[in-house]
Image 1 (tube, rainbow, N blue to C red):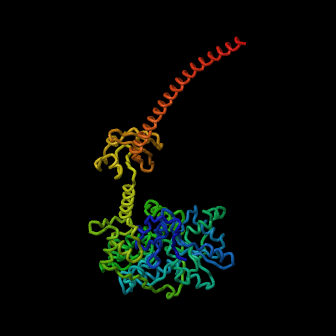
Image 2 (image 1 turned 45 degrees about the horizontal axis):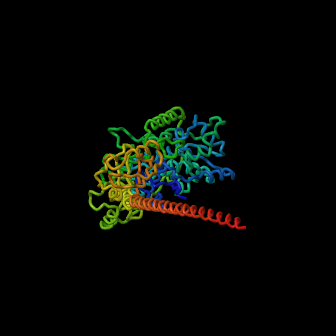
Image 3 (image 1 turned 180 degrees about the horizontal axis):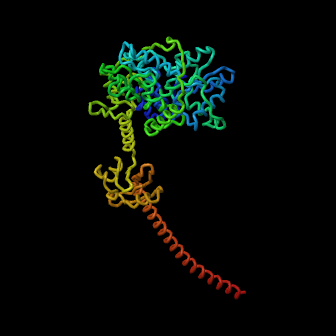
Length: 572
């Protein structure tokens, strides 16, 4: 499993890891609707900056706690090599509590890696008097070794051919007991890969892993402080701070007369590597180089790690480590013996030589994101690359995607949004909180017989502003049919507020013809109703006249019949 890996579900392709990676060992590949940042293991130097800066905590470090616990539970004899920066890398109230906690966890031996530092420093001092290649770079920091092997392989001869304090201490322990398993615990992520490459260190835990294992310190709440198993370290405890190796090795670090220099911080390391690769370094014989600013006391995997740029906190850590050294220094230096051959190592050229794309290929990629001329190349760095050309090269090599260009994607999004907006058959007008027109689409310009010149003006020049003001105050959707007589229009309008942008959007559909048809239909209905009423009235009049005539005739007939009946009765 990779030492540093990405939790894809958490990655939000913000490019922060790429922007801050000193060697840009991050690639982006499409993953469905989104891109995902992946570590390029062949170029990664494992400085851990991407882990520290990821806002989504999508970058994770491989955990080896379960492996170590299985050894302890299985009865294995396991020793701890504890990095001297533990006094600032673990938030225990007393350094002795950490030692006691490790004993309680089941470790048979608990010693300081500072012992290995003293062994390595002793050999470094001897080398400094007879080195063949100058300047010689101390090899204690695995990130620096990775940087040279992977990105400056031409400088490999400048690396001191010595193992790190971690490996030196592991070999010291196994010289006494070959069956012993050695676990290094420290603030460095790169130590995990260093252990993977060598057989001497069986596992590496970070301070954060240990602190999580101990439930944030609860595990050591009931223990009494304990001391390290002998032998006890002395000057090696200074290795975690810049200048500590030079001090331990007794190499002259005089600012004016000395021929050695201490460098910490990746930017400074890179600057020195560039200068050295150009052959411009003179008068320097020994270089102590630590990737983390201030040294290992500012390692990326310390428990409750403070920001890398927190200089005040860094100063406090340095002072605390120095105080520990002064109060815990043994009266007599330990007598450490290790065969010199066990302190040496070889290096490997692990540089990745990718072919440079042709100028035509680079220009083709740039053209795809709208960068046709030199002026189009903004070099804003938002994508994580220092220049548009660097990003185009990465695209050609399959490490980046076109869509990583923020200005291009913004322009593309605005273009699509504008295309959709202007394709809408309904008129759309967007105003801000001051009722100033910010956007108007083609349909609205045609509807209200205006041009883009109205943008920036008050909405009242086109419409009744009260409708917009009402929505701004009430934050409610307003739907109504409104007649704008000055435009000769009747519109169906919907006005609503967009809180995310404090904008008010009005959508207008022309219903003038529909309104006219409704008016005409209404007139026809009214005319038909009036005609029907007229017919009814006439019919009623005729009926009344007929009824009147029938009434008179009936009366006359009735009278005649009565007279006839009376006449017939008289004749009888």
